[in-house]
Amino acid sequence: MALELLKEGHRKALQAVGDLELALRLLRGGQAAQAVAAVKATLVFLEGEQRVHFRQEEEGLFLYLAKVTGEGPLLAMVGEHESYWKAVASLSGLSQEPGDGAELEHLLEHIVSMLKGHIEKEDTAYFPLAEEHLSPRHLKELDEEMGIIAHLG
Ligand SMILES: [Fe+2]
Ligand SMILES: [Fe+2]
Image 1: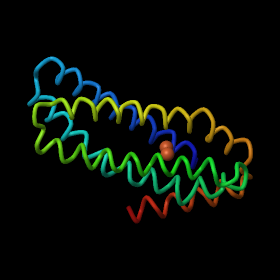
Image 2: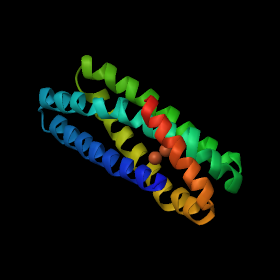
Image 3: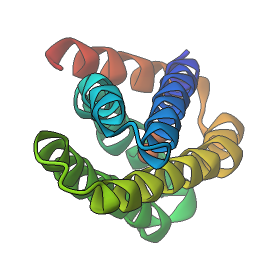
């Protein structure tokens, strides 16, 4: 259940990635205003729901996984979350003042590739590891903790 929720979060995040790719195509096609509108619409998800997902990983799943992998790999994943927030803050700023679009294009490319890579690692390495190593009791605890985080926002 806990992992299903996180996987569902990834499906939604990949939809947001699709929206950013659309914004990129618009931008490259000379439709800057439409691209900026698409970015602004996607920022609601990127800044909001994604925050809950990252907290559920950092304050939930990763703490259990650290017992299996050691802290190092998970600190790297948390570092990727932090890079994401910096990039999204820049994206928010550029959506207000896009300039000639070159910086926005570069940033969109960066966020798309960063998110795809991050999700791929979790889906193919960390979630399977959790499915293999976490006991039913720990999975239940994680489920409850994720519920509390979702509730608190
Ligand atoms: Fe993550
Ligand atoms: Fe994730």
